[in-house]
Image (cartoon, rainbow, N blue to C red; front, side, top):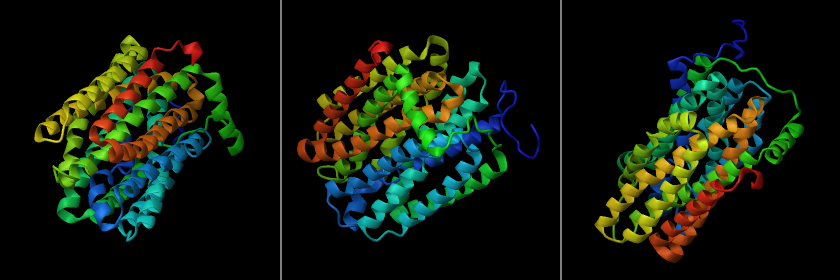
Length: 401
């Protein structure tokens, strides 16, 4: 490796802790941008004069933008230097967050939300970077550490945005997020080495190869479908929680809604344990355990939560359990997918994460509709059904996927 290119084609027996930290923090900040708006939806609905159904388009378009970016942008990581791609996306994400901070209408906010989703795929450029740097024997653990950063970014973003919005206004949340992404860009420019491309296909052929990978590997199809279904449950819960808490009988503000992110963060902290279990016992077992936890938690919330203060404890406990299940399943699915074809990790990741965030977008839209029509128990029932379908997929024989 020359000092000029700093290309990653080196001994992978060790990856510096500081570099893992950079990847984890970067993934967390990128993914967090997707969720800053969720605890503020009740406040945004009032200020932008939008009904609950219309305000639900903010998380829906954010997740949809992310899914589009995963499918059409993430495969570029196999063709070009990931470091350059990460830096470009950081610049776009910073601009999109600033646009959201200055939005005075729902239309502008929706456009900014779509742009945030597209550029926040920076997080999914950093995860395969970690897989490329790690030794095969430690890949699950390394990816698990980076995913812990990503998942904590997702969950703690709600806590931070809810608190800041209540005390300094919702616009300050997006300004602070833009500053953090700008600092991330500087850190990546200084600390992340360059990556060699693993293939030389043109862009159209590159996208076509994504679909060939999907046809070739039944395990990829099964992982993408199961994680997509779990994401429906995850997003239906988090995209409706703030709206439910803002209404009668709770009348809770953004800070209270965001505080539930702490419960989810407790579950995310177990992600490295899932990576170790996947390395030791095999990822298949982890996917089934994770999906089972999701089903059990949402069934309990559907049966036990009601419109009184006791419901808040049930919801908090359920958030710990189902977040643990979703994140454990994701780590296991990534372990499966990244091992299929090392030279195609970005494209394989695009399929898995694209399916996941299509599920996120679907869950956000379905959750808002179900909440309006059937209330909170309806949302929990929808999530339990999605988790049951995911568990069923994980019991399919691989050759039938």
